[in-house]
Amino acid sequence: MQVRSIIGGMAFVGAFVVAISCSDRDAPTAVAGGLTQPDHSIHGASANVTGSSLAPFTFRAPLDPFRLQQLPDFLMRSDARTDIVVQSLTFAPGAGPWHTHPGPSFVYVIEGEIKVERVLEPHVCRPSAVFTPGSAYFEVGNQVHRAVVVSDIPAVLLVTRFNIPVGAPITVPAADPGCR
Image (cartoon, rainbow, N blue to C red):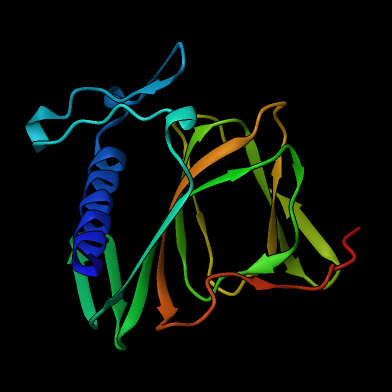
């Protein structure tokens, strides 16, 4: 059963990467009940994801050291065995708790509107732009931040997290930074 979950999780990661790697002309479109992804038949995959049909989940598996280099400008590397985590998360409207993640995260917004408040220096926080359905953003590992859902409906997200120490917590609570 664990092997089936890992294979399912890795298939999801592959579908997620395909979905976010398409050009802007292939951006998802809003339809009643959620988002419909464009036809990705050229990639051998398609998706029709709606927040209301996507129950929260977490897939986690160890990943051996790797080095990915796609010239001219993409490099991703890990020299240690770490966990990769793929999640579907739902956040209620309002501000969430301050926290960190040990590694970087790629986040895709399915429903709702969300921004991220990041601590850039002691007592100084900066909000991001508001991310809407079909947009994506990046979270830096070990940076204190919190999600703020600015829509009246919950935000539904797909998240892929890298460089999580094997078996370690995915999210680490942080003290209120007292931002001004």
